Amino acid sequence: MTAGSPRCTSPRTRITAVAALAVAGALVLTGCGDQTKKDDSGSSSGATSSTSKSAAPLFAKLPKKYQDAGVIKVGTDASYAPMEQTSDGKIIGIDPDLGAALSKQLGVRFEFTNGQFDGLITSLYTGREDIVMSAMSDTKDRQQGLDDKGKKTGKGVDFVDYYMSGSSLLVQKGNPKNINALADVCGRTVAVQRGTIYEDAFKKQKTACGSKGLTIQAFDTDAEAQTRVKAGGAVADLNDTPVAAYIAQKSGGGKDFQIAGSPADAGPFGIALDKSNSQLRDALQQALNAIIQDGSYAQVLHKWNADSGAVKTASINGGS
Image (cartoon, rainbow, N blue to C red; front, top):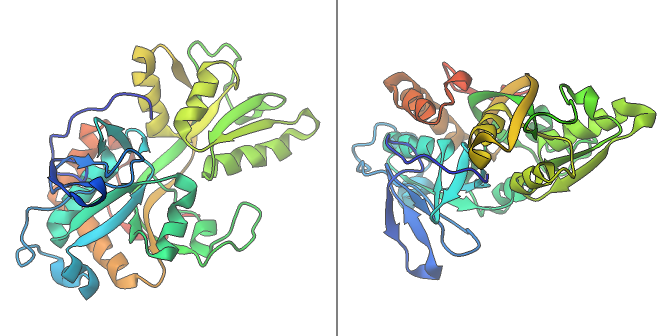
């Protein structure tokens, strides 16, 4: 996202920057700390826990692979504030801060790597990443490895759900095109990030628009979609409600955008991982429930003004 970012104060994933790895110019971040990018392409950063392995309460629940490695590799698209974004070469936001809190429960480092959203699930299949934390909506299609047309594109993933979010339309400040619902975009041009459920939503709306039609411009990042709306080349972007609210508040000092209409289609964000990785999935669920119970989860959400999406318990594959 294009907006600025608050500083880390509580133990989450994207807090306290620590170790600079000389290999490949990579910078890693630790346990309550900031995350830093490996190189100019934003290839990687992570968060480590200062908790020793023997002291971490859920370390024994992890597969031996992660116990031995001392790290869980996390794929993310760091262009989605307040969920994740880069600031001064570091990855910060809700997901990194939650990763830092989880690392204290599990006793291993959460190492975040920045990539394009539409390639994150594939990174699980190839083993490049162990999990995805990137404001990814848990959907049945993603669980089953289906694209928006119902075609099989992969073996599917499991989700550990940790946040509830609706969708909101982001329009120019003052709403000059009078967009208040999805139906209002018919016959016009919209902008959206490629590979998201919101691109799928616009495609469904295009069908609903019938003869009026709808032109959909899809971009690699949501920041590009925002720029298109800001310039007047598109009437709206569709986004997660906390993300849209953050953009409207921060971009141009609050003078660039506003949310149009009311949030809709609430659903869970989930940590995604390969279906074969059930032991790690269950350990993550236990760790999430632990940070919900000890209050560190609530501290993370409150810090980023995202309390409204809090869940009372972490579930598995709860999306529809």
